[in-house]
Amino acid sequence: MDVDVDQQLLIESAGGDSLPDVPLPDVFNCAIECTRELLEFYMYARYKYQDDAALSYMEDALHRYHTFKDVFLLGRAGKR
Image (tube, rainbow, N blue to C red; front, top):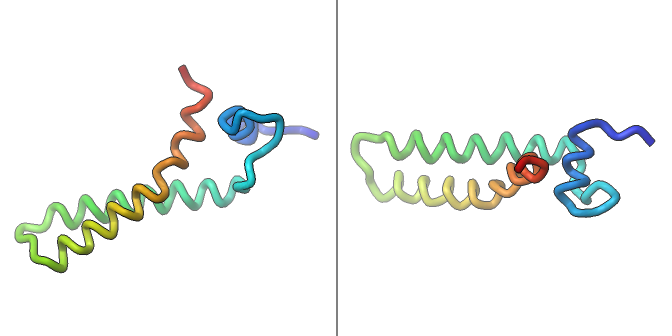
């Protein structure tokens, strides 16, 4: 079975001999979602005036960012 470089990074980051349960398209989608949430948080933080609604949106975006942020550790695992 041929394994490309991205799959090999996932295998090494999982610390095993096979791919983790997360398929590559899902990893990519998680990375996109994480980036989107970080940008959303940033955009709300740039508001001139912060009201309760904006702070609530910021908290939600930050929570969703923390939900997805570990996806970036998969690509970092092979680097020293």
